[in-house]
Amino acid sequence: MHQTDPRPWVRHGLWAAAIAVGVVILRQTVQLSAPLFTSSSGEGPKQSEAKVPDYTYEPWYDLAVQDGRTKPFQTACVEAVRHITGRSHFEGLDPVAVVLAWKLGEGAAGAQAGTNWETYPFILCDHHGLRRQIQTHGDGAGRQLTKAQETGKYMAPAELRRSSAFDDLLGEVARKRKEMQGKADRELTTEHLKAEEVGRRLHMFDALCGKTSTRLFRNALVSDRYVDLGEYADIDGRSPEEALAKLAGQRVKLPDPLPFPQSQFNTVREAFKGVRVAYLSGDGGRFDRASRTFFQVLADESVGPYPGVSTIPWEILLNRWQPFLWSWITMLAALVLVGTSLMSGARLCYLAGMSIYVASLTVQALGLALRIVIAGRPPVSNMYESVIFVAFMAAVFALILEWIYRRGFIALAGAAVAALGLMLADQLPLALDPKISPIVPVLRTNYWLTVHVLTIVSSYAAGTLAWGLGNLTLGMLIFGHANPATHKTLAHYTYRALQIAVLLLAAGTFLGGWWAAESWGRFWGWDPKEVGALIALVCYVIPLHARYLGWVDDFGLAIAAVLCYASILLSWYVVNFLVAAGLHSYGFGAGGAAWILWARLLNIEWVLIAALRYLPACPFPCTDRGSK
Image (cartoon, rainbow, N blue to C red; front, side, top):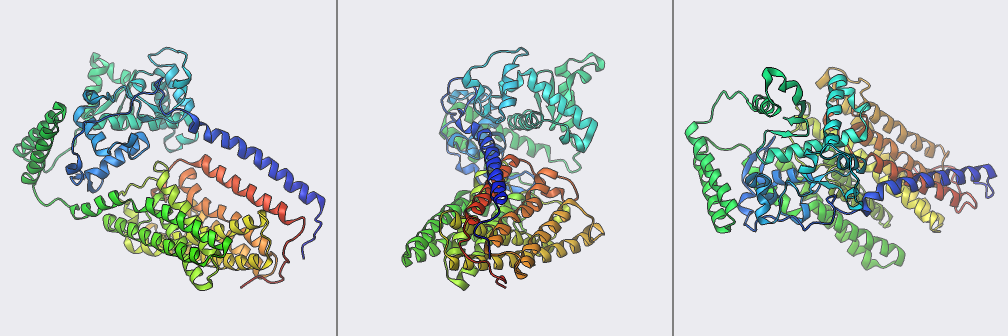
C-alpha cells in the first residue's frame, strides 16, 4: 500500500520540479505566442488585400504538369503558394489564380487588378530577429523602424532585394556550406537558416515569374545556389549583370537527346503568348477563349500519351474534398459526445458519438485510399503521411478495444489523440508538408513499405493511444475523480495498448533489420533511426515487466505510458527533424522543435501535478499484481 503521509522531501521535490517546469513553460509560451499578437504585415499600415483578375480559373485545374511526378496544375499551384506564403490559400485567393498572376503577369503586371506583387508583402518571413535585420539595413543603410514594421510575418520581394543585411546573411550561409559541407547546420544561427528559407521562397517566386535567377544586393541565387557576382564580374571585365546572365544561361542549359520538334514548340509557345496577352487585357472572355485554344494546342501537338494522367481526376477530388480537414472536425464532435455520455450517462450521446467516430474513420480511410491511388504506394513515406496514419490507426485500435470492452473511456482517448494528430497535420503545412512526392530508390518497394513501415508506424499509433489513456487517467485524478474501479479499468486498457505497441515495435524493428540486410548489406548498423527504434522498444518493455511483477500500480502505469511516449517522439520526430543524420535521410525534415519541447514540458507538468494530487492520500490501493 502507498503511504498516506509520504516523506516530506518527496513532496518538496515534486513542488520544486513543478514550479521550475512551470516557469520554463511560461517563458516558452511567451516566446512562441509573440507572433500571434502581431499584425499580418511588416509594410507599415495595413494594406488592402491582394487581388487577382476576376477570371474563370477552373479549366486550368486538371492541366497535367510534370513536377517530380505527373500532377494536376491545381496541386502544383497549391504547393508553390504554400511554400512561398506558408498558406495554401493566401488571403483566401485561389492558388491557381495567384500562380497565374505571377506567371502571366511576371509578378508586377498584376497591378492592373490592384496588386503589384513586387511591392506587396507575401513572402513568409516569420522570424522577428531576421525581419529586424533585413528592415533596418535596407538600401544598405541602417534606419529606425515603426512598430508596425517590426511586427508581422510577410515581406515584399522588393524589400528583400534591396537589403544588404539579407545579402550578407546569405553570403555567410554560402561560405559555411562550402567550407563545412553537411556539418554547416551546426554552426549556422537560426537567423542564417531562416534567411536561407526566405531566399528559397524569393527564388521560387522569381522562377514562377519566368526569371532564371534572383538578383540581390551584391549577389544572386541561381538554381537554388548562392553565388558572389563579384567573382564572376572580374572575369574578362564583365559587369555583375553580364556575369549573372551568362552564369544563369549556363546553369539552366540541359542536354536534350530527344529534342522536341521545333515547329510544335513554336506552336505551343505562340498559344501561350496568346494566353498572356489575353490575361493582361483585363477581358475575362478573351482569357477564357485563349485558355481553351492553348489547351487544344497542347492536346493536338502532344507527342504521345502523357504518363500518369489517369490519377489526375482522383487528385482533383482529394483537393476539393479535403478529407483530413473534415476528419478532425468530425472526430472532435465525436469526442464531445462521448465525453458528455461519460459525464451524464446519456446512452443516446454515446451512440451518436460512436456513429460520428465511425464516420470520421471512414472519411480518413477514403482519404488514405485516394493518396494510395495517386502515389501508387502505402501512405507512410513522409512525416505528414505518418502522422495521419498514426491518427487513423490509433482510432482503429481504440475502436477495436471499445467494441470489446464497451466502457467509453477507450473511445474518448482514441478520439482525442486522433483529433489532435489530424489537426496538427492539417494546420502545420510547413512542418508537416502534405505534398505527394516521388520516393527515393531505397523505398521503391511496396512490399517492404507495407510490411515494415506500416508495422512500425502502427506501433507508434498504439503507443499514442496508451499515451492518451495515461493522460486521461491523470486528468481524472487531477480533477478529483478518484473512483478505484474506474482507475483500475483505465489501467487495464492502458496495459493492453502498451502490449500492442511492444508487439508491433518488436516486429517492426526486426523487419527493418531484414530490409536493411537486403538494401544495405547489413542487418544492424547503429544508424540513428535504428537506435531510436531500439530505445523505444526497450522503454515500452520496462513498464510492461514492472507491471507484471507488481512493481508499479495503476497510477505508475499511467505515468509510464505518458513518459515512455518521449521515446516514440525520439524515434519518430527527433531523429528525423533534429538529428537528421544517417542512412534514413529520406525521412528528414525541419521545424517545430520549440513547439515539441513546449508540449513535452506541458505534459511533464501535468504528470507532476497528478503526482502531487496522488501522494497526500492515495485514492486507490496498489495491487500486488498488475492486469495481464
